[in-house]
Image 1 (cartoon, rainbow, N blue to C red):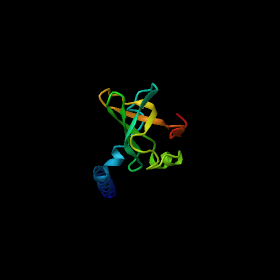
Image 2 (cartoon, rainbow, N blue to C red; image 1 turned 120 degrees about the vertical axis):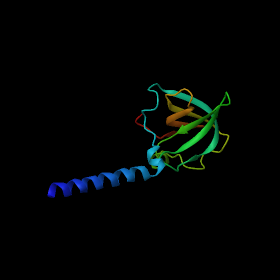
Image 3 (cartoon, helix red, strand yellow; image 1 turned 90 degrees about the horizontal axis):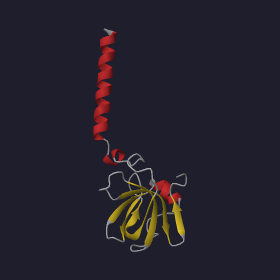
Length: 130
């Protein structure tokens, strides 16, 4: 009798965990690791298209490259990005910037997981270990 009761308890717990995972907020699922990006270093220059945002699991912005294509720039988590000195409102829209990092594995996805962003003579090293 005790085995049956503990099995029911485990089933209930497993069900609750499954429901919890399904109902968890989307940003937790959309977290950007390094696995979706190429190993080769990648550099891109352009003009800041959107302000740097420190909302969500990673800070983000967009830049327009010389060919007119707009790239998603994924930075470090907000706290780490701000510790590197890159805060919302520091870089004006239209400013020329350069990002260094790793391009998305899918060539159709214009996205860079960024280790460093340079604006003028300022370098924001959001992933100094990369």
